[in-house]
Length: 81
Image: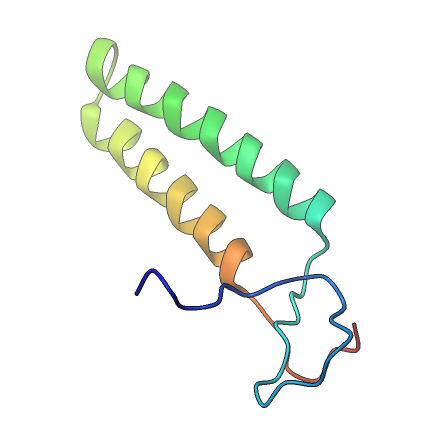
């Protein structure tokens, strides 16, 4: 597993047998989503622990994580890079 190549967003000069990873969202959008979801998750967990109904805080925290992971793995094989 450690010797596997990770997907790269940079243009490679050599041809490879695998298709390149083509993210749907550019790095700036993904970074903004990650930071917003991280903050929402932290606030929601704090809400779940210290205030109100813990189910709401837990739901928001899990939903934020799923949203962030969805933006991270969304790709379009037809997109030109």
